[in-house]
Image (cartoon, rainbow, N blue to C red):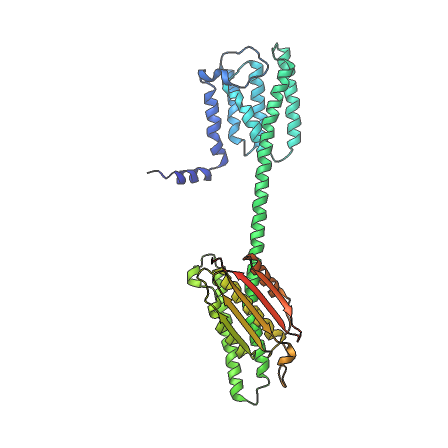
Length: 391
């Protein structure tokens, strides 16, 4: 059985001249059919002559250039116009005259350069043809010549409209592609920020703490072990991120960080010297989907900021689940509350990209995101993320 789609694909892979050739040959063949003799485009109303050897040349000149109408539109319109003019002057009123209208539409659509020049030249040539036909005894009235000119101008205009429409569509596709690339770069930047910043911040804090534990070998060993664990987790998360960026990855096989990993996230912060208390209410909805990932990122970014700017300050993470949304609130006491003798200084501050990215993530799901400063110098991060479920 013939696969029509494969046939069409092969046809579209052919050179454009080969694909346009059947139209040229078909129109030329139709010109010799007696039943179509009275259906050609005619101007001037000179008496018709029977077909002879010269008629074959005129028909070929009118029709065969259509094979190059898209590849060389300027050549096509010149040859077809010459053939049409010869056919009208010599009285060969055949079906091939319709090639002029087709050529005007095609030229208007495909001619890229000197369009105005061609329009002016063709208009002047038409005026010259009308004068010649009138002197040869043509019965056409002036208004009929004008009507024919307007019809041909309309054909050119249709082609120009097709060209502008095609250009607008190409521009739209280019804009969509650029917006898609920008969105993808933004997504990659957010994922890298969320993954790398959290783990590297934890490793910096843990390493700074190790400098003060040289007199306590047990605690020093524990801290260095935590650094190694954090590094291994960072490598694992980076591999996960690279898998997500791979176009051929399997979403089910790769998996996505979710709220079920909160305890691991909190434990890592604790091992970095941040006292964190986790409170969970309710059960995650099965339809949470992307909401779980966004909520996980909110907690992750909030704990990262706590390690950076208020290391050692008590931090409370509260997560509440229901069928409609996930509510997250992370509260960190002021930096002064965590300052103790011998404690290292906070890690260097960031660019603020993390909170901006979180707001965009939450807004994309139709939720609410906010931050606030506490009276004691602390900081609160709140997020309400719809899960898409129903009550």
